[in-house]
Amino acid sequence: MSAPAGTARKSRVFYVFVLPWVIGFLTLTAFPLAYAFWLSLTSADVLSQDSDFVGAANYTELLHDARAGEAFARTALFTLATVPASVLGGLLLAVLVQRPLPGRAFYRAAFFLPSVVPPVATAIAFKALFARDTGAVNGVLGLAGAEAVTWTEGPHMTAVLVCLALWGVGSFMTISLAALQDVPRDLFDAALVDGAGALRTFTAVTLPLISPVLLFQAVTGVTAGLQTFLPALLLAPGSGGGDLTTMPQGGYFFMIHVYVAYFAEGRFGYASALLWVLFLLTLACTGVLFRLSRRFVFTLVGPGGGRP
Image 1 (cartoon, rainbow, N blue to C red):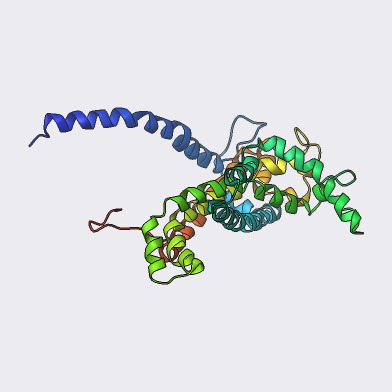
Image 2: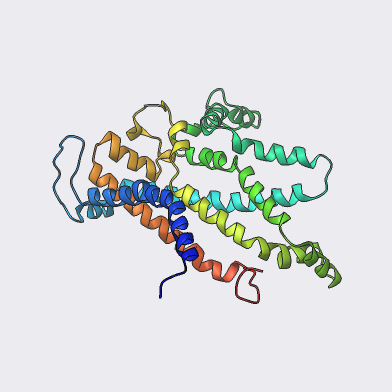
């Protein structure tokens, strides 16, 4: 039995509209991933156009690459430090600016403004702020009698990058604020009738209802944290074309190691293996978050099984 003419026409229209996305996904996502995986199984480098199939040799070398392990550990610690702080800090600011305070719109704009400043300008400002001899941070420490710290040229660079990441917490605040304003008002009235206080209402009503948004922020934050590259590159001494093999220890993240393998050493095969491992680790972290979300994320379900 053939489908009605109206249904077939709707199907053709649907495929026409999704065709640009399918073409973009195949050419910009699927093909680069597949080609990078093929490169990771070869000895491709910048010096020779011919490459030999080496199987899992690049992945075996990665297991013994101590510098890659240190870079990934530093990246993981950076992600663990910045993502919870950004999500919770954004939620705290959203709760504060949601209250009927005088000048509430000004505070919302002031907290959100740093997140729209271009990353290059922000990095340059932080580089000046944390400069050893002329920076304001060391100036304040000097008033307290502390010695000057070389923030951007040693292991302390990780702390500067954490501060730089938290500087953009306004974007998290905006998303949390939108979620808070979407909570049904009648639930607050019901909690008030039941005698719940402000803290009980927040933990039992507000927090569960915005938990899907917090999960979204955590997933996107982890993905961005594991791929941190540009801030470290901009804060490095001699950034903008400098030798990244001399990157300070505190700024040598995993993506910097990938960049060095690609463009400083010209080892396309090994660098592709690094990227594929990072891709799989990112998928694993995302899977863990979604697995944990079954316990901590609340989803409204209507009588028919869908969202009400």
